[in-house]
Amino acid sequence: MRISFSWPAAFIVCACLMLGAAHLVAAQEDDSAKVRALETKWTDSYKQRKIDILASLLAEDFVITVEDGTTYSKSGYITHTADASVQVKVAELSDLKVHLHGNASVVTGAYHEKGISNGKPYEYHDRLTDVWLRKEGNWQVIASHYSVPTK
Image (cartoon, rainbow, N blue to C red; front, side, top):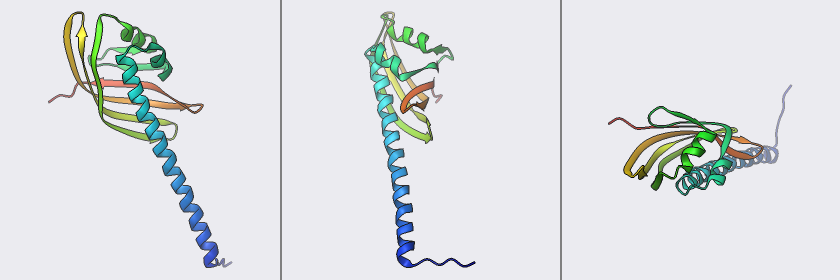
């Protein structure tokens, strides 16, 4: 059986396919921008000890692995963040790359933190990997890993 298309019909089909592809790219760019903004919101909430905002960004089963290999659950990380013996003076993200995979997003980048802990200055220059999951239209971070790069 032979199927033939007229030029106008072929044009309409191609135009519809291109519009669909453009919509998909726009949706991915929108999700990427949302996740990037949430990374900044998380960093700012941590620095300013805005526990309610921080808690809303973390999934209930959130886990973070920090530079020395210690892991914290959501409640442990929140307790750490609320610790008044630590004053975060600088908390900066850079080199962020957002990798979207449907309802999951993997973010890689660099993190710089500087402050005072128990009266002594400290400074970190880390690499990070964060995993975000979209549930019911909202993005929450489910896992995070920080490490100190070797030179």
